[in-house]
Length: 280
Image (cartoon, rainbow, N blue to C red; front, side):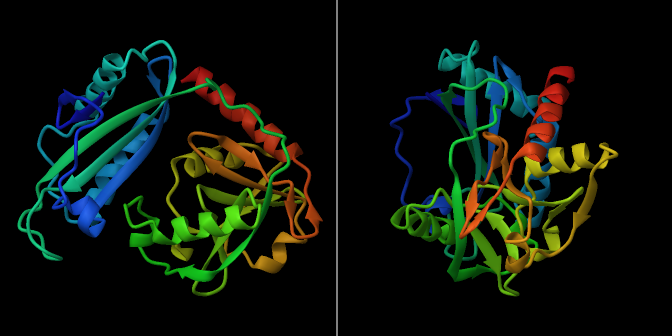
């Protein structure tokens, strides 16, 4: 079952070919983890969505409050009998039908869908995990590249490249040839006690898990946080490399080309992340 503008519908509901998210990528989405009915990092997701809607010049409905959307998420979970398990929520917002590139209206529809997932809290996946650079196409750094929109052609093509080359993931570069992010999350590089990640100005996604990890690093005295551009050459000199997103949490990278990484810092941060979740 899905939630379309507050109505619970069968999951086989068809999307019109005039849907602007389908026709022009005129849509935003949030991927959210819910554990036994508890929405993780909901405030961060909500405010990112609202800020993104403003950037996209979408009309924000008067009832589009944090409390309203939270209740709609819970309604969708309950309609799918998933209140007692963990689930992955996709909250999509698209501009209403009408117009070509220029829309006829800035009013929106929303869709909430849900899938069960097995993990409650975040676990460290220590399976072999290999990445490499994707250099066919580049991220153009701008405010739009920091949004979660339906314009994910680069990620799709790079995912196919990763599959064809037996990689677990790819690192994306911006037009300045700096490492921006992975296909499904932000990238953190560890060298000694310094933990480095790309700044938003380089074009990386403003990830919700990125925000959580930044906060943990800043509050941990033994770590030094650096938000600065990452050169591909730095990766081979790093002690660790890990990827963050709200579903997986922290994914340590095992190998980049001939470089093999450890994961002790990933373990430390993941433990602190799970403590933070239990306390909120």
